Length: 158
Image (cartoon, rainbow, N blue to C red; front, side, top):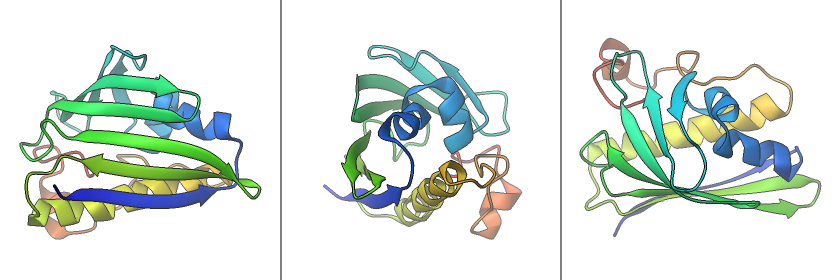
């Protein structure tokens, strides 16, 4: 099955990077400023991108000191059943994030969009943890015109 992969080094302690995938406050800095739910294993997270309804709902499958795993249970059709994994390791004076989004049924245009946006948000997190302002939604940058015109109706900018 096709998958999305990214590998990013961030000059910040692993605990600080981990918090951006495993806490509501961190997720608000990383992906979207409006997130609700329980980020603990067995919990459910709801991510909002400008609309009244959650654009993506994730079951939290695993949270350890160096790994966070979610499964999409509601959201864009292409995401339902896919898993999002954030594996963390310590490198030379940096924390390395290895992100995967596995379980795509086929390669489609939307997968290309998601690949680019996940890279954007991970590089945004790198910048945030290294001293810049967060670029989480709605402070992110649209990468294609339909994203700007239908942000609240389409998937969460990733």
